[in-house]
Image (tube, rainbow, N blue to C red; front, side):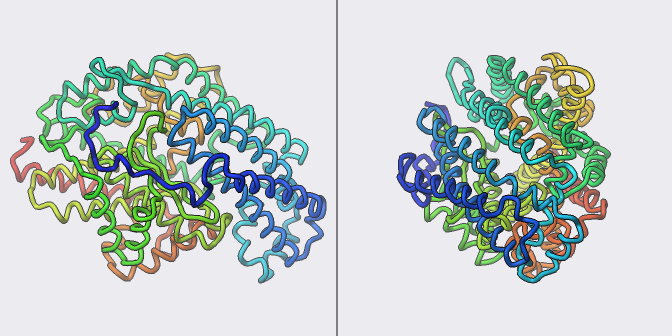
Length: 598
Ligand SMILES: [Zn+2]
């Protein structure tokens, strides 16, 4: 058992029966078989013939291609969701493994289609794209063709895809399992990783220190394997990049995010150039806590002895109200997640750590996965994941291909939902000390999303660059690069002694190399949208909902235009950071007003 207080969320489990009854449901097997058969006949019919299709024929082919992928994705989603709530249960792991293999086999069958589409010469492709019957697939087709310069021949692509099952995907799965198995010995009691991490939010400094030491100790067993996995993933990336001709380790990610190396570098530069915001905040926080300097384990400490504990029922109402206040339609949608068991809430033994939303589950609705502990952070995480849920729900009618968003716009609705919920919390609070606490929590979250992710991107960049140009990374090298890129951000404001192995529980480095900057990108973009909503009020509601309803059917720049923002202007990043700085000004003023930290 864990030491977590009861939240009332203990029995809040999702109902996956909207997908399948269980892992043995014959409908699951039937779907997989149907997708396999359909893939085979798709190949039979279209292989080598794509260039000869007219616009109507091509539209029909894409629809069938999407239908096959939706059928299979549905089964694969089920396997992953079922596995996430009990990773120690062997049949669940086995189903994930089996469907991953089936998925790769079907992908292999169908690869030719994207390759032949990418192979069409530019004039022929533009002529097809101009036809009305292909309007629905225009953005999707352009997205497929953007890989044109980096594709290999079909047999080569087939080998790459098949070998990824025992390569990249296997390393990713191993890493996930290693993380899921981490147990923390805290004061002689065994607790889960999330539980131990949540102690960093405790007002008791000694408990925070003990928890951080316990986490550091818990990260040691298996660290060697996790380092090996990261080294291997970095090599895997560099092999792919060399074969395909991507210029840098992150070029592939930028391309798949519908952005460019230059635009991402501009974001990185903008954020790095404002690390002073981070240092200023942590210096204020040290004064408010009566410390000379924060240690890394003090960053999340509450400002006063105000240990928020929000029961599940209260969190539910707060979040529903926040969304309903924005627009009744969004409130109704969010309410369905609770009422219809689309959420799995409590931490449990063997459950995967963290939170996510399975956004585009074909044929059904999104599912939200949490480890709800009742602290303020987990209330905002709930709002965050429901923001994703709302986005997926609204975009679902577009179908799988058009609903799926690139990483850069995937966080728009989640950050927006968090902002709505935060404003509501702040409005309901009149006590200046507690207002200051809320504001501080908000700034800390923004630091975690905007600045910390860029510092992590700098770490990732250093790891991949070192692996590529020098050698395999030793334990010392990982630590040196991690602490170096962290202290670039913290300066002298935070003592990071003992923090050297804390990169090694972050799954994104392994599962989605290059991912982390998208949080910063998405957050600063979403903050700009939210600021516009605050300035312009209800006239922004419909354009914003239209943006969500558009899913990933348009490039990010066009989505931004729908709400009157220009994504190609680097000033959008600087202005987002200015908004964060304004919150910091407010927190400093409030601290002075109530006579704290003088
Ligand atoms: Zn998110």
